[in-house]
Picture 1 (cartoon, rainbow, N blue to C red):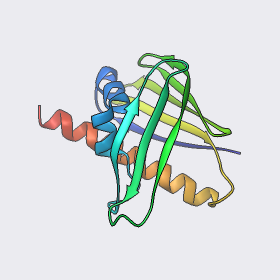
Picture 2: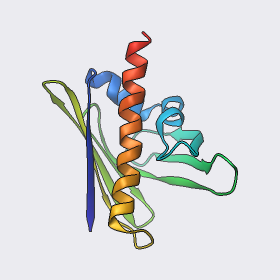
Picture 3: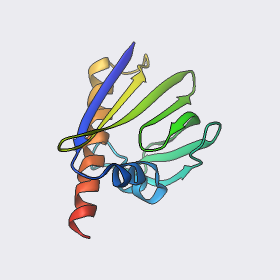
Length: 138
């Protein structure tokens, strides 16, 4: 089963792409709730390149590496990647008010569809807030 989440980011596609693919930015936005964070991220953004985001509870009680391999990279438009036996696709579509970022991914069996959708949507919403905050501080 595929799950899809989406947001619109009011920013130029170049800024949206940069914030989505730069390790320092990923560390700033990649969390589903305030009690989690991403202390480090690695990105080799090319087909066959690897990525890894270390996701941890802020209290140190739990953590894991979200990692995989990029299978397709079309600058400012599309990123596809495999993580374990699952795949995800991120699409960047310029719209009137900004850039629509849509993530479609294979569901897993541990958490409910609603939990997965809520978690990935929360991360995407954090991403949109991060980009907006960066633009406001420029």
